[in-house]
Image (cartoon, rainbow, N blue to C red; front, side, top):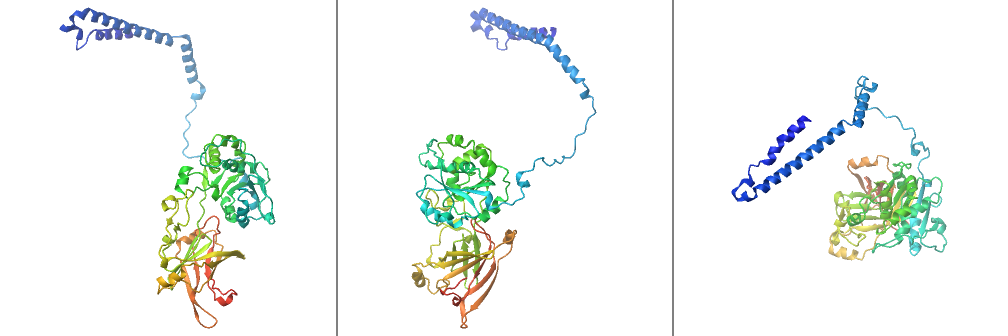
Amino acid sequence: MRLILTVMLSFIPYLYSSPHRPCSSPVARPRLRRCRLSRLATALVATSGLLLASVAWLSLVFSPATSRCWHLLRDWEDAHIWKHPHIPTQTHIPVPHEPRNRSLWEEEEEDLSLNHLMFGIAGSSQLWERRKELVRLWWRPSQMRGHVWLEEQVSPEEGDDSLPPIIVSEDSSRFRYTNPTGHPSGLRISRIAMESFRLSLPGVRWFILGDDDTIFNVNNLLAVLTKYDPSQMVYVGNPSESHSANSYFSHNMAFGGGGIAISYPLAQALSPIHDDCIDRYPKLYGSDDRLHACITELGVPLSKEPGFHQRSICYDHTHKLTFSISLGYVVQVFPNVLLPRDLERAELTFSAWNGIRHPSEFDLDIKFPVSSLCKKPILFFLNEVGREGNATLGTYSRSLVKDDLKRKLLCFPRSPPLPNVEKIQVLGLPLSKNWHLLMILPFFFFAAPIRRPDGCVADQLQLLMSLSDLQLGSVERSFWVPRLVPNEHFNDGGYWI
């Protein structure tokens, strides 16, 4: 206390003195008395404040409650827990024990099959008459489960037994929709996963969502989903190939046009919250962004599965031809040798969702189509496909182009490639699990002229090659073995490769 008063008294003279001494200047002499009174008042206020603060601090320190706290702290420090010898810190990280509850996937002995998938196909009653033919291409009635969800019932027709059953979606008009450019049908489609879950069908591990014009390769789909644990909340899909679409919606949102896979636990978690969730997002555009918003609220990220774009490349060095089996539905025969890097780029024969047709719009390697008539490829479009054992066999027919005559005249003396070939046959052999290791191997080719029965040598070559494939999710991985045989082997008179 004495120390505090000493400090206070030593501080007071500084309040009465100033190096500038404004009150002692000649100009301020009439106000000298007023300045001294002001200094005295300031000193009294400061001294009173310091005294009050000191008294409050001393009363707090020596109060009975504070003394009791000090005694408790001293007793706690003297307790026996502080008298144990020092335990050295572990220098290694202990190995965690195996969890008591193993995942359902680890306990499941049965491999993933088509019976474990539940397909929810979004359709429209007005378009179903045409779109159902697309569904018929990949749907397996006796092996697959799923439904087509329409806004209203349609009349059944003959042959519809080979299609998924039709279910009319619940009324979604009670939900708010304020997007000025979209359509309220997005509300109905976003609820397909929830309505499929509420059917309570047994043995479902995955809910597969897609549009009525989405083509699924179910074998590849099974191979992809086998990588994931269906006992966890998993959201599998891929963003759009359009930069502007990803910027507008989300770079981490699965687009239903390419298909979406949702595990059973995620659908189970979505079911009780989905309706309240979509009512919180009335400004969203469609169904995919609403589903993504609700899944984001659950904290589940997107597991991206871009798939593989099929593009098989082979060459005929003698005739300087390039064969490109691209995207599974067309064989292109170029009249010159093109480098693989150029062939890997997709030709811009399509437009984005917003109508823009420019390479900068897409998240793909894009190139403009060949403009020179003499460098344009000859096209062979897919005519039919079948199986030979465990291999696929596709038949491609030559496309009749009105510019063929013009090409013969303007590109003389070089004639169009393969003038006598009308059909190409592509045999796809299954690859091993290490098929991707072929990417580091060089291409190798075997070419030999084909001798016709009359002894003449055909202009075409028999090709056998080992090719690395970049596959799309809807196309099976395989070796492509183009074969050419004389036209006498076929009743319709064509050359097949």
